[in-house]
Every structure is written in C-alpha cells, then in structure tokens.
Amino acid sequence: MNFLITGGCGYIGTNLTKYLLNKGHKVTIIDNLWFGNNLKKNKNLKIIKEDVRNFDKLKITNTYAIIHLANIANDPTVELNPNLSWEVNVLASKLIADHAIKNKVKKLIFFSSGSVYGVKKENKVTEDLKLNPISIYNKTKMIAERVFLSYKNNIDIKCLRPATVCGLSERLRLDVTVNKLTFDAYYKKKIFVDGGSQIRPNVNLRDIERVVDFFLFSKKKFNDDVYNMGFENYSILKIAKKIQKKTGAKLKVNKSIDIRSYRQDSSRLIKTGFKPHFTVDNAIDELIEYFKKNKRSKFGTQNFNLKKMKELNVE
Image (cartoon, rainbow, N blue to C red; front, side, top):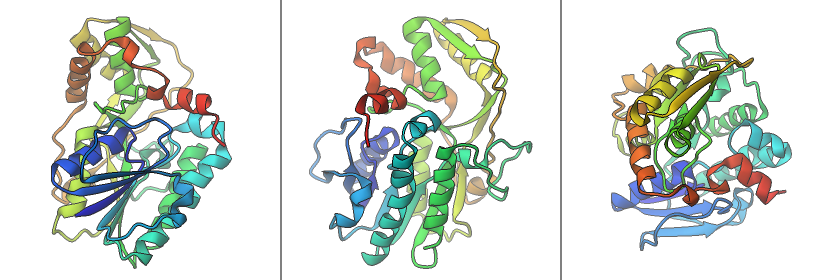
C-alpha cells in the first residue's frame, strides 16, 4: 500500500515511516526538513522537501491513506510566531483534506493533541468532555480537528489526541518530559524537578505506531472519530524517581507556582480492542541504552523544538 506522511521526518514521523517500510509498504513524505532527515535511503521511500502550506501545489496520487503529523509543536514554539502556527497547523489542514477527497484517499489520520482539553478537574478526561484549550497551540489543534471532522462524511477520518510522547527516535526530542529527564540524569547526573506533583499523561512512541497500524489495517468498524491516546497518568516526580532509580542520578525538587495537572482516559480506544504494550519504564530503559552508545556531543539544537525554531527564525 502507498502512504503519505506529512512531517514524516519528525520525532513521531521518523519511527512511523520506518514501521510502515518494514512492513513492505511505500511511503511518501512531505516535510520541510527544518529539523533534518535521519531516515536511510529506501527504494520504497520518497521524501519531498516542501512546506505543507503549499500542499495544494503538489501532485500526489495513488495514496491509500494520509497521516498528518506536520505542525508547529508545543506552546512556547508556537508563541514565537503565532501567524506561522495558524497557517501550518490550521490552514494547511483544509488543503490536505481537499487533496484527500479529490484523489479518493481511503483514510486520513490526524494527530491532534491531548492538550485540547485544557485543565480539567475530572479524574477521567474522556473524549466527551468540553474542549477548553488555554494556549494558541491548543487552539490550533482544536480548530484543525473541526476542519478535518467536517469532511467525515466523505472520507474515513480519525483524530488522535496523543498524550505527552516518550521514547526513542532517530529524530529524538529532548524537550518532552520523560526524554528530557532521562537525558539530564544520564549526561548531567542530576534531575531537576519544579514542583513534581503535577500529573502528566504519557504514551510510548512504540504504542503510537501500533495505534496507527490498528486504525489503518483493522477490519473492525469504529463508531467514533476521535480517540485519546495516553495510557499512564503519572506525576512528574514519580517519573523522575523512576529515572533516578535506573541511573543513580541526584534528584532535586524545586518549588513551582505552576501546579497544573493534565490527565487522559483512553477507555474508548481500549474498548475497540487495542491494547497498549509499551510503558514509560520501557521508554526510559531504551533511552538509557541509546545514551550509553552515544556521546553527549551528538545532541544539539535539533533535539529541542524551541531552540531550533529560534535558530531558524522562520517566517
């Protein structure tokens, strides 16, 4: 089968591309390559260096499914240039949906964000709760969802709301909780936590691959269009202590005025028959083994979204 992945050279996209290639599929990537490309050449892989804002100018046919990952990610990065973020995260969504309909694409999977809920008092944050995004980034994701879902009568669309992603990728992000704390513990021998009581939902990158596989290839009929994708709600301090136990790093907890917590309940996804296999602990172990094989000098601004976007100064 032929698949199109926007942002296919990114943190999630790199792993997902490799996953589909290993299954014998053909993958075309649309990526501006701001963060480089860590994928090896493959006869079934085509990488088109292009901005998703120009998606309507591309001529791509014979595609079974589109997986839309490309976005300006996380709050501080979006706030560097809100106009750019609205264009990439929202306006490009309509271009991609229109292309999918015009070219008779069978399925479209959009990666939204678990942050669209905002801060909730409920212990179980399910897909039925009202969305209350509190940042520009959250708002762009919410509106992009609405754009895609407006096409649901014409194409099989799934909007996935991933929790904070953790785990190893050749295009590794070191600005997400588990990855950052593990990096600091291994190379700096210290872990600094602000507050620590704040709850964060987590999803292992390997389970993201499996969720996408599930929706692409399952013969089941799904009743819903939106699914949470977070399986472990842990306090930041609990995550830090897990890492400390595995690395022997020193742990220091500082006071914090930001005590906001975020949770996710993924019962809807689990009820479809999907079962998560990979955990935060698995991610920590995999990262530690990777760090053992690499010097700290391997990592730079390309591993931190905000630092890299400041460096690029993109308009």
